Length: 433
Image (cartoon, rainbow, N blue to C red; front, top):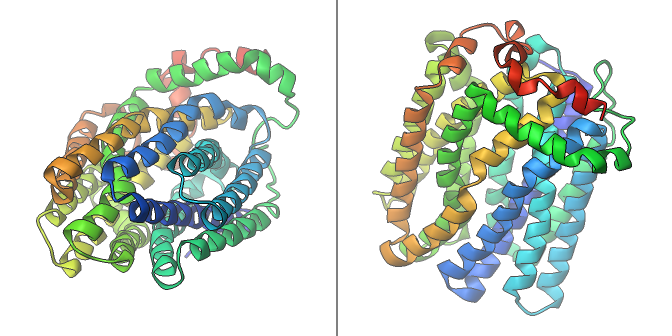
């Protein structure tokens, strides 16, 4: 496997540890809430409130990563996650169960994640050469996504063996280690954001920057269509892993946290296979665009099939296929976005796409709570599979992505600015506002 340099390796380590910590926190709080409330509707409401903050803050917070130093913003986000994990640990150990308090702390964690993810996406091209971007994105997906999914597996094992407080304590430690890794990153070459921006100037122009970012996403046709497809995937995947799986395992399959961990592990194995072998192999033979469509369709079929099964082994096998299919979409879409977006707009475009692709799932998460109550968790899983299949159908109409993904990565660097000139027309004026 190619070495992309010390800075990227440190970034990857910090991101991965942060992903493990965040996922572990959410799993521990989810299981804690299910055990205390016994209500899918209440539990779904807590997750939906948290998700609402993460999704809707992205277009407002992401300009920070383009205006200030991205690396500094990224480090602050990781440090804030450690503080929230510590607060959740205190709430669980020292206070009686409170859905309001736990939801509030999860909202703060989501606020941090809403800024951290687009900032990290904008930082990657500053750490590697353009020709290495696809490989770096694949490696990032292999490590970060698999470890992120594995966070639930780790959380499940810790909760099953030692309880919720221990799982939250582990999340605090992992966040601190992630911050230590991020503090050692010192990129050379392209500056990862504007290091000389002042807060006063930013506050005077934040609304222009936010609107410019959202407009750029809407006018960039390739990203607009990808965001719609991603929205359908997120409508399915986020409730499936955060809401449906705990109830499905606990009430329908009569399982324990270990089974949830096994399901998450299946997804993680699929992500590893998809990132390390399947996506590259399929890209070489089918092309990146076709690979993305076929992989998404296979993911939808696997999730729908899992809803019809009761055997843990068969369900986990379906999750392996789903994880590999998801990776083909994630790697190729993120590579196109990172390469083709103008450097000064990377964080805002990533934040805008993140918003459009996730804006529906806070509402649908609550809706899945009602679906579970009335039709059962297995039915909800099948509905998730159908949503993912619709995402594959939507992406078939993304003509610009088809054309750009047919070229070499170094040939499409900054291509969006020439393809969609009106989307970035005010970039320079905003930068000097």
